Length: 341
Image 1 (cartoon, rainbow, N blue to C red):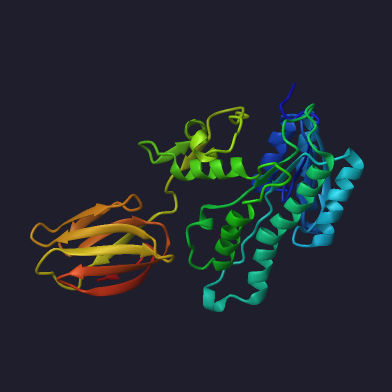
Image 2 (cartoon, helix red, strand yellow):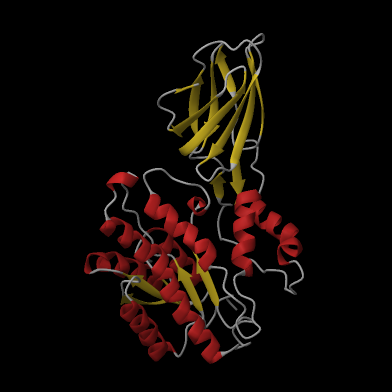
């Protein structure tokens, strides 16, 4: 029997992209999927996803709802429960961007992104939890009363210049997922474990991370993540087809640094991010014109005597220089212009 047989899954924002792919995959595993789309303009795409699922032998319906609006979210759940009796799975996938430099960002741009990305996940998760608690555990379907998957981004922990609203919405999800214990049921554990695995799984020689490697890392650290909380080792639904490859540092840029003068003695450069978290420490030795470093977020490369490079995630940083040269230099890592030190 398919792993999700007879389970009802709502996937928000599933008329395209990641949401559509999740809907198709869950339908392949036996779930009846609710394809959510926000506006009339997305209806045709939602219909295409539904038709593809039905043509493959799956079950799917469509429901229009703006997840940032409480009444529409409540109606989506009410309609689903009326038709199918319950909701077993929620995939909180709906998300968007409205980018602008911080000083130019409008309140409408801020509220629009926070409303969909953060408030929308809260509203949907709240309705799902209410239904899970109302129904309780149906062991014929699952050992869990329900399952909630919250799509997020590396930018819930990494600042992103020009995307303050988006990064703030993702950072809020990290706290929103930390659901309290509900009537003795522990929530959010697998989500936390999976995110840790995504962040910590070592990349291969091609700077990539495979889904198999993430799975192996998650299994090896499961007990550590759970701590004293009793938990059953997670069971995975392996994708049909080739292993999925993730790029470990696909968004890094090669940031140039240029010393304005040759220091008389070795100097130390401490680079921290916008949250004042240390990223890398470099030691420049003028006699050898070399850079040594510590930290995992950057890889230095000396090009000439007074110029070198570091691989950094795009964003805002500060470089504090100590030794023969004393200064503090704020900069944005873009990979376009050098940072004068």
